[in-house]
Image (cartoon, rainbow, N blue to C red; front, side, top):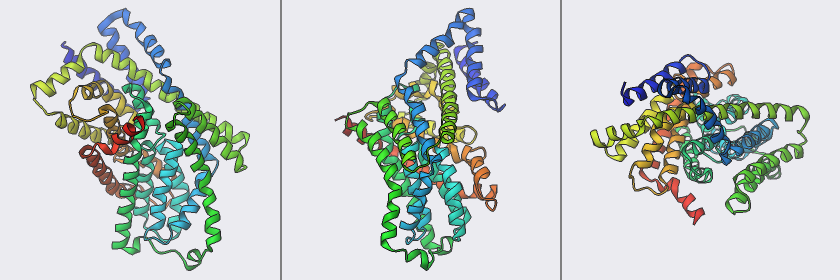
Length: 443
């Protein structure tokens, strides 16, 4: 069997096993182990041990449990609920103000969390009932919550970017900085879409009641206190890191400690909260570690048979595709995979092939791998919300009020998928949106 056939067999075997619904890391590891035994015999038993030691030597991975802890602590201590009340009052006068306020609430949650799930849970539990009670169109606001929740993997500190950085051997700090402007741009695009929809059809978002509009300025200013804790945490964590006072690991420790202090300041810190946060942190961290371990084992076998070089020869030399055509095809494949796989599975599947290939392409873009990491992260946003198996679609069905059906959820998401795709095109046409800030900070 040729090496090309072996590579195809490995990919197909992994995809088939994933369709069984078993753990992603187990399926990846199983394919890696079977392939290694078939190719190298008994000598391959050292492969997982080498991958383990390589995993433990990656300094950036130490930040993962601290960021996950920080996000869960902020969500479970009720600070996000206070933020929504503030947004509700200050954005209420605008057409579709509550929906736009929810989008920017998701930006704040993303900046203190790094995960999509927390934003979706907060939006479903707090924002949806509030907007439904005020007569907002259920399809519109369901899409707002789902689309806004995806910002959690693009705006720093993004946990998905940490995983990409570890596998692609790129600085996490550069990826975080590169995600700032694309994340804010996408939030603005979402908000403009909501504003235009409501201006065209005001019935989608009725105005606030006279009592709500008549709230005294003093009470509105007092509500701004809800934004103090998230702002301080973000400023301490990112500010100290950008200014050079802390390294990446120390910044994650600052964020986790600040979130705990904020919960205590709100008088919501107790033993039950600490235990629940610790358990969820360990569960998420262990899952990520196993996934990376499986990816390393798979990549070692895949690269060892020369499959990456063979694919490069097919794309560049045999088919004579331009570098930009290859990038476009990669993005299309991401979008298709996103209909069936989550972001972690996508990364594990494409990492052995796409990352080395992108490193060899001459696109004329500074910090090219970081730029590609942003494109990958943005297509992961589509993966979270794309039918039929988008992860967030089923989470939304489980957490949304009973009047929102699965059909409503599917209807709501298409405009936001198109908006994300539009933003991806902008980043491809104007790479500086992603690459300027990391270069400026380094300079």
